[in-house]
Amino acid sequence: MVGFALFGAGRIGRLHAHNILRHPRAELVQLYDVLRPAAEALARETGAAVAPSIEAALADSRVQAIIIASSTDTHVDLITRGVRAGKAVFCEKPIALDLARVDACWREIEPFDPLFQIGFNRRFDPSMAELKRRLDAQELGPLRQLVITSRDPDLPSLDYLRRSGGILRDMTIHDFDMARFLLPEEPQEVMCMASVQFEPRLAELGDHDTAVVLLRTRSGIQAVIMNSRRAAYGYDQRVEALCEGGALFVGNLRPHAVERWDSGATGAAAPLLHFFVERYRESYERELDAFIEAIERGQPPPVGFEDGRRALLLAEAAYRSLAQGGVVAVPSS
Image (cartoon, rainbow, N blue to C red; front, top):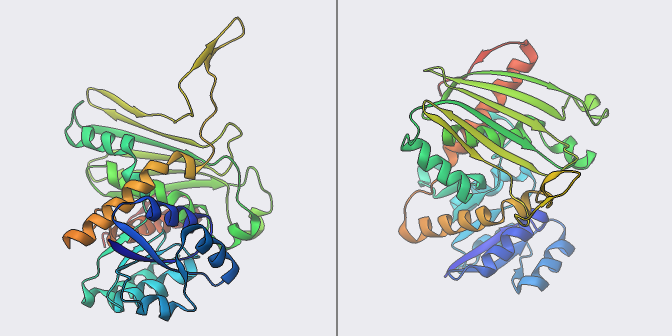
């Protein structure tokens, strides 16, 4: 059994806690949250102990790995302390909100040869993984164009948005990683347009609720990312891959596949799955399994620190494009 300490007892922390409980080779040993009542509530659900401090959780010899599901501003400190304590580290995205802090974190932990996994769970979604397999096999010939659509059902709270780092670091970062996952080569150029369409108060924060990003690789393959913080019809997650000999599509998931046809209309009667917890339930389970397998085998996880860094690199390039109003080059390192 791999013993875990979980930092953060909010929505994503609770998801990870219950996935650990269901995993046959994992045990949730310690919980810590700066809001002790939140940790205590989750402890009652899971049977884990509430750690009085970060130090106490890391000092527990039963803890082999930590999951960081706390606010982004705590990530670098917890990563560093976890690695120094000899623990395998899983961290929700992003590592940090600026590249300089990410690079400083890596310089500090690299000498320890850390086992680190970043929480880009969508790579583990069965449909996305199958799309990747088919693209790599060039089932329909070389990839020519990629379209990623990602729209949330509604905006998070204004308090959350103030601390999020902006739509490109908070939301689009998943799509930057998905583009890197599916493309056969790294994006070299970025162009971004973004605006405020739904929540006027975002303009005061210098943030946006709607964005389109165009990526281009060395050989000219295009990837288009379309984001919106609000889609009245539900959580919209689609990928379209245009290849030399045809196209591959990953569509939205629904609670069931029953369609209704009558004199008024024909089509799917079921709504889209509400949000990421429902849509990506299986991918969260599979990413935990991949992390545990990496620990057991002593091998690097399938998505690591550099993947987190590269996604943030694209986000920062997109923000430069937004500020400059044109295409910008993505740094090679």
